[in-house]
Amino acid sequence: MIDLRSDTVTKPTAGMRRAMAAAEVGDDVYGEDPTVNKLQERAAELLGLEAALFVPSGTMGNQIAVKVHTRPGDEVILEADSHIFNYEMGMMAAFSGVLARPIQTARGVLPLEAVAEAIRSAIYYLSRTGLVCIENTHNRKSGAIYPLEAARELLEFAHSKGLPVHLDGARIFNAAVALGLPARELARGLDSVMFCLSKGLGAPVGSLLLGSRAFIEEARRVRKMLGGGMRQAGVLAAAGLYALEHHIDCLAEDHENARLLAQGLAELGSVQLEPVETNIVIFNLKEMSAAEFAEQMKERGILVHAIGPQRIRLVTHLDVSREQIVKAVAAARELLGRD
Image (cartoon, rainbow, N blue to C red; front, side, top):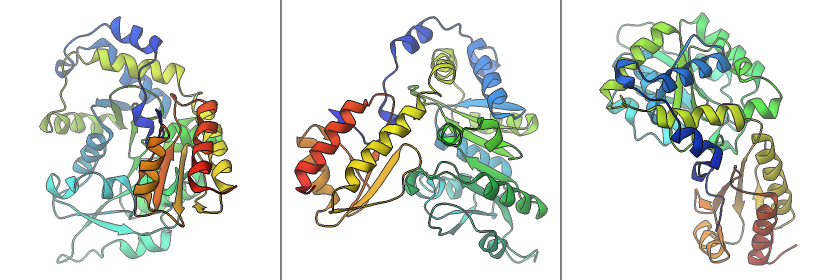
């Protein structure tokens, strides 16, 4: 099977498995796992923030950030199609007692005017605005990159209003590679950042939450509340270290494969393709349901993800070659019956 459902489906490489097997470990709840500590230090160095915390998942990292930055009854400004709002099980309400104030956008970029309008007035009988969240790259917007200048303008504006800004940077390295910039440039000035090791970077488990030392100390307490205090986690951290050292540059190939895939699909008159910037390709089918397309592609040896009645998402990653992309395009052409 050629699996294009997500970049979460990657398997550890042989080198990554060797690193995991050889990892030095300790009890991370006591802060004594040397490999976890090394991973956290390396992540903080790459992103240019003071400290980092290894967590089991990106959702946990995001929700820890929401909890630390807010208090019950607050509102969180975010994009309407964001991961935090759509795919994290209403956890901001269930765990932190806060409400989402979503803003609909075309490509995931929050307009300053809309953010200004969404910020609550400082009147005692209104909810308080406690946090602004952005996503880079944006999952449901075909891996769209949050423009650097737009992010910095939003950050400056939010800070002028006394609001912290959290970045769901699950795929921040995809954005950095596509822009030809170090990831620290995309994280500069942000109050907290989360990025995933288990997506395009190819590790089996784990994400990093980053911020100031004071923020991370409080985040460590919240991680424990959520049951995220792992013990000899160095076996997992070793995979993350390997990914950071060996797989960031591989993302450029994923982007090239996504462009190749998009070019092939664009030749078919029966699909409406969204802009492709990184490793995610999303399109709408004009004459077939997404469920039928996914089933028919599966019969042809291709796994795809239906994300709406006629909307399909394809994601390129470490375990998909250029040759397999060509095969996937050929299968779509055969199924949809047009050149």
